Length: 427
Image (cartoon, rainbow, N blue to C red):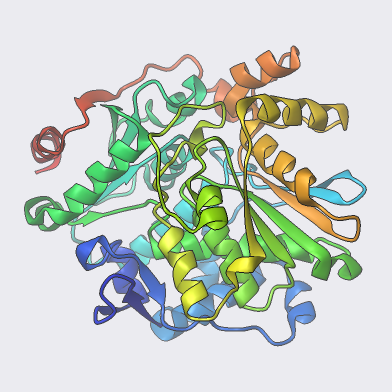
């Protein structure tokens, strides 16, 4: 499989190179030269999740990994389901929080860890990533204890939930967590600056586990096929997918799934008040504002990194921008949505609330809606309890870390400070 750099198309790499390199020249994203299509979609959807996922990923990876090895990698990564729950007559939730860190990021992070273990030439690797909440935990747990790999996770001070923080900032060993005095966009910029530094990038064999890494992105494509597979056949072509969107990896994966032949009717890019993309889709003007902290903090992103991949799919004819509508849901309506879901007997959290509200605003009578449940409600225990006025029980994954000590270091949003920290810690 060949991938090219969206900022410098002359840079062409293999899948293994893209996984290990993370970003291309000039901080460019890698994207497949061709998106494969699946002919007999009904037969494909009839296969078990892991078998189907290995075959799907094999279409991209080609002969770089043999089929038996790839199946083992998928089986090691996807050890939990992605169930679809019916919420009302024509609305479903795709629950992506049944993995070890209770968030959709488990799928991509664990598959990426399998890829790096497969492709590594035994050189020491440093994973550097920024998180607005869930990526940090998924990456930390996916790579925790792996020999030859150090992980540095940057997160914005005071802008993730306490339980999110406990999930990945209490591990230690090869997991190094840094609380940055800035917002998520500042953390992302520090990651980009690090990749631009030859001393850091080459000296520490830098890689990124953000959704910019192609292995994470392609793993996410798999659960859209699983979602549609669980719908009755007569409903599949009517499916409208509402994606709670921050860095836009999830929506990118959904658009790739449709380009491969998955019968999705259209998409909703559902954001909170950090609404760069919905405004862009309406006006054609790309004008990020200062990031605002919200209840749906994992989506507090004003300059989403994955959007260029969606633009590329439009440019190369893989999708039509008219199939994507944007909607911004404010704090009041986020809370209303969580209450409405609760009244339907479905306990949810703010990110899914944003996706549900955006879906309900636009869903037609002859359509079927699927909104993504990207995290377990208990990860946002305080917010959900404040909204609903009822206690939320902690699953064992959170109960086990609730009283652990945070091991993070603190840094300003300054590249020289981060550079000095990483060289001292890992050099």
